[in-house]
Length: 269
Image (cartoon, rainbow, N blue to C red; front, side, top):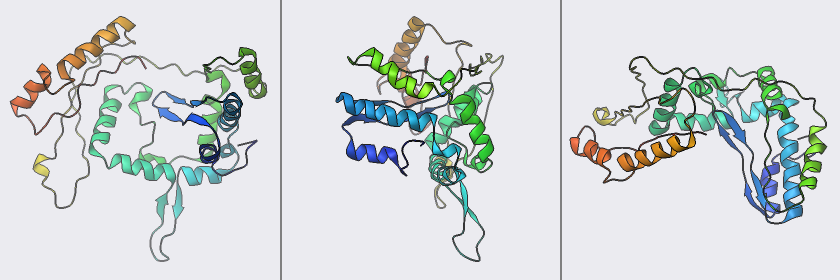
């Protein structure tokens, strides 16, 4: 980043800080950068590193970062064709080789196609190699801007000091309008069916390599908290345990070799 010229700052923090949590998580509609420490000065140091990495990443100025973390061509043997390599590219190839993961992603993409959930936030390996540096940079400058961010602090440290920490970084930016609202997904007027394939071993019997999911979009908007809680309880009661009535009925019906998961209601997130 702008202040910390090291190859893997998070790795260095894991080795040398008193952190109690240090990670970053990507979701279809947001990216979270949580960090925690019971030592106040250590916490402030971690926040400084995080803010600099998020708001001033080296990746915006050095295309080699995208090449390493995203994708690049690689020569494995002199007379062999070029191959694609990259940290995220290789990770997502692994994800797409997992039938359960691919099933869940395909379900979400087709259930909510008119929203950000209609695409894979982690990246489809077949599409990752189309990502250019200019598009990557423009996307970051547009959506990873402080105007599109929310900051949370928790603890008994002075609130004024928190604002001072944020001001050291936010003063470099001008407020701008960012359109990042998630559009509504219209309810289906009739059932739809989608089929997809997944990889199996060369010598495996494919007669039992089939999975089926049945899902519904329950509302165009986020349900209120009471409705969401009620649906979560109902989901658990019907499918959450081996003895739950719907799960047991599906198992006893012999429609398949087993029931995977325990329901799957996803409320506000």
